[in-house]
Image (cartoon, rainbow over all chains, first blue to last red; front, side, top):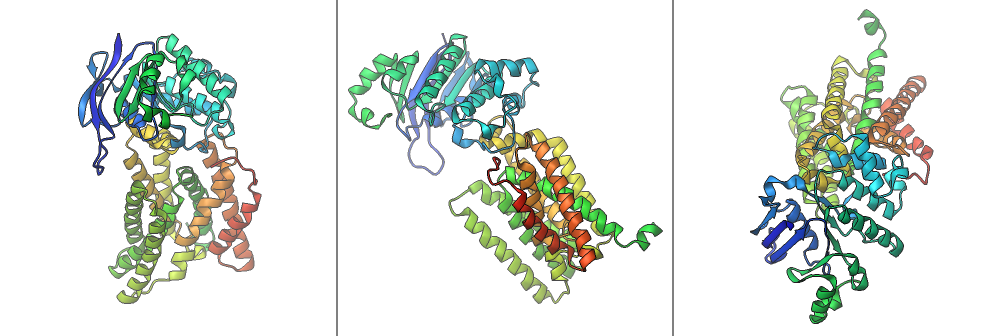
Length: 233
Length: 264
């Protein structure tokens, strides 16, 4: 059963004459790992921000577990692109992860420990952020996101700038999270076999080009030649 | 009281210690939030207000704080826009503000010891200067008590903080107001121009390998007090101006910062 349903979303940034998203509909089912793929500028980050409630759609609606998103925003958490964070800020990994509970009830040390354990960085808790590798920083950011009381997690290009082994390790972690009952929607530049790690795929280029199981989406997109030129290394 | 009256150096020493602790702590927050350029703008915006206040027969610092606040608002507006040329625009405005202040002093025919305003005159500091320093110190303490967690979130992830319901614009405005107060209160110690050195160098030293913003601020304040008291003592010993001497000591202290420093 879907626990997030977005229907007919249209959005344009103020001052821009064209739509960043046009009539986009997606459904996210509980406990699934869904990839959001598309070329640069396709509107992936915009869609994730709409689904988290940071932006309001010009048209369309978003429901979570049958409730309008505005009433249950805390059920949806967004992990931003790493480039948006100030990684040189003087803070330790546990300090960053604790921030996931900012504006919610205070975190306990057990919850903090659990979040660190889930992404496998317990031993890095006391390290400063800027002393970590890119992959470790991404895991710390994921742990922070997992500290929120949300059940639906939107990850904005978590694997960008990671080397292939670290990317694979990261995919294993998010697969385990989905298997534990969380709903994950991950924007990505993955293509080909890498997409088989996901349960479903949504291909976006301002409109939804295709959605469904990875194999089906890839077959559908191969018939749309322009997509294969743009998408993914 | 008579002890203070007969020992002229007591008030300047208090101001030295408070400014030496306050400016670096404030600077640490501003550097981690990447807002040091705005401090420069605010410090240059103080002069027109000072000139107008003196012309109207008001306390100079009131005018300084008001025009500094206007500078803070302008800086906030420019920062929010973040256009490609925003740094260039900001630098032009700060130069223009200084020019406006000089022109106002000339046009209004008022007498302001410009050297003391720009570069400080610690040895003639009085109770009023000490009071101003204490007020800005209290304001900073309030900001830390009520906004510390939010400052961390905004410094680390401004968009995420906004998405989590933190009013980023209000927090940045509070930061701007406190900065304006700190700059005006430091007028006696190091002047509104040289205060940049006291806001920056001890903060950079305190940030080296600091595990949290709080630790960095405490360390910065300790370094700031040491540099300020040393500058004050040397100034008395060699009969030099304390403000410029403190600034020179700040520059010399840069050599103590490790080159491979992994922070900010």
